[in-house]
Amino acid sequence: MNKMSAKITDIQSLNNLNLVSFDFNGISLSMVSLDLNENIKIGINVTLSAKATNVAIAKNFNGELSYSNQIKAKISSINNGQILSSIKAELNNTILESIITFKSCKRMDLQVGDDILLLIKASELSMLADF
Amino acid sequence: MIKIQIHKNLHGINKDTDLDVNIEIKSGEFLAISGKSGSGKTTLLRILAGLEKAKGKIEVNGEIWLDEKNSLIPQKRGIGFVFQDYALFENMSVLQNLLFVKKDINLASHLLQITELSALKNRSTKTLSGGQKQRVSLCRAMMNRPKLLLLDEPLSALDSEMRAKLQTEILSLHKEFKTTTIMVSHDPSEIYKLSSRVLILDNGKIIKDGTAKKVLLKTSGSQKFSFSGELLEIKKVDVIFIAIVSIGQQLVEVVINESEAKCLKIGQTVNLSTKAFSPSISY
Image 1 (cartoon, each protein chain N blue to C red):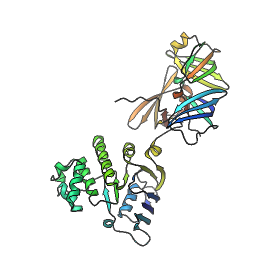
Image 2: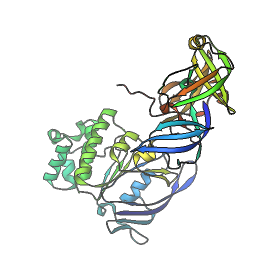
Image 3: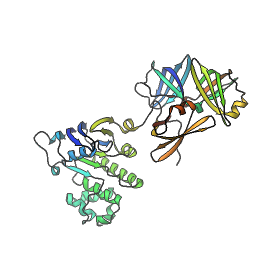
Image 4: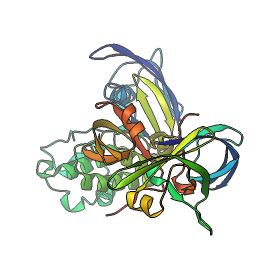
């Protein structure tokens, strides 16, 4: 599971639906969630998580994407299997992993050192229960 | 308003614990009590019914049922009690079982109508199915228009379809008679459907008190879809790992990565969770 330490910068609520915004090392992230724990307030630090299988990758991308969370990073390692590839990228001492198909990895010609964009939907980002 | 302030020593199998309950229940409230076996749920109901002794005070709508000096006998408390086993008079008909409590034919007929038992009113209770017997028990408990209705796992011996039907009937009876009700139950869907408040009892103490959603919704951080289970196996496939976990009576598979696989031990209790946005529902 990918873990990111972030600070809550905004909470927008409608009934029990919430859009929470975070600052993760200067990068703005957002998450949609149902009811929030009462301790969740603007300004507190939380650990965010996203499953590696829910993280997509873009390279040399030019255009608009609906992904709320777009994180610029550099590939630090690639572990190719026969069907899947585990791509790890590093930014500010945080390692984030994306599991994509080996086919996509080949098609995109991903190499260690490439600058990429990690993509996570707001509904696939979670806060861990560490508060 | 019902005020309960009681204390009793519980003799458990392994150790003795103290039942300590201090609560107020509003008139007309439907309160569910859940908790592990031996936590004191049934004892609490029996104390309220006057079937078991305890120290403390029970006050119901200003009437003292129990204090240091007095303990009102069960027959004078105005209580309806439904147990898991039906406890009907088998040599009597359905209607006779109800009239035995109170000779009020109008009320008896009305109760039998709500619970769709009118056609069976002259049948001997011996010939009824489990669901029908429990409906008769419920009607009988309502015959003296109780101030307090106590239900001790009333539906746990029934199949799921019959449970759902009786839950609806209990709800209709509660809406019509507005009887303050305390139900012991282990079934989250039953508690959610029927109760306005839930207490979780653990070792004789109330550890949670709130609405069903607040008390029973299992969450893990912002993840609302959360279950605990036993990790049975981890299999490596390609660059990923698959964890097999048993939850309740089912096995589920979860894809994990290498670092997660390294931290887990077979046999340990794990928590599986995902966001409320991910699961799909089919029927």
